Length: 385
Ligand code: SIN
Ligand code: CO
Image 1 (tube, rainbow, N blue to C red):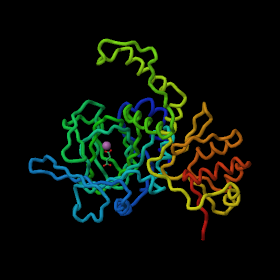
Image 2 (image 1 turned 135 degrees about the vertical axis):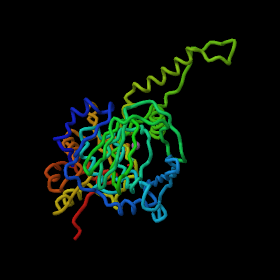
Image 3 (image 1 turned 30 degrees about the horizontal axis):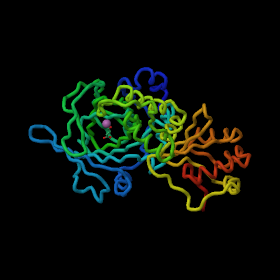
């Protein structure tokens, strides 16, 4: 999928809007066709493992709203009535490849920054209320029309009208106030207040970007370092002298602690840990029932309808200085001869077997493919008819 070049130029967008101000791309996707039916979304929200919620709004006599959030899995939707509610399902790209295809339109941004595609279905008057997100988001309007109001980035007071819903207290001045129609795209940078109310039953696709905070990253790095048994240098103080008051922490001691941490931040080990984190998938990847062997690869790729596909939600990243590839938290030291194959795998999400076969020349290539299949990073589809 591609954003229409008549209304969207990546460089211009990045220079003017990305992380700066919201923008509306009318007809961002020309002749947009929905990637999921509302019934399929509702069915997905019945799955135990799907992350889904319904946000309901009741309009009070004084025109204020009361809110309620319910979490899936849902067994039916009758009780919600036919207006004033929205069903939201996270990471639909990981469940439905067709929805995952939407991400190809955002190839001009680093793959590791992409979080997921959330899909919402709103009944008339449905919405999740005026709020701020910590993440940049592109909201694509599918079926139906929805009125969106978006403000510039500003400091606002959050409040929780009910459990699991955080809204902004003050009204905001909308710099975008528009009725979105199918194919329109709204870009909302992190921290900009926004509110979307469906004018009729509506589908919305939100492509969200992750931006971990220092604390989140430190926590994840710490967990990963412990798992990998790295960064295990300990605090040392061989020059310690006796002191009068043992309850004091000296500035020198604080500096030594910070120096130890700074050493970590500057070490190559941290680069490796960060790259592992960036490559991690949100959900567990599914490994094949029977492991593939390098010897099988040529025959499998040669089958008439063979298609190698990057698993939904899997990342296959490259770090040039190390010439290393990363996928789902693992580092792959790819031999120089297999680098063209590894790059080809990174450049597209789907590869017909015949195309790939021309690229598979060495035992290393076959082993790399078998390993990636066995880790669940890629999947091989064969015509089984
Ligand atoms: C929605 O689709 O209803 C919510 C999207 C958002 O506000 O981020
Ligand atoms: Co939002």
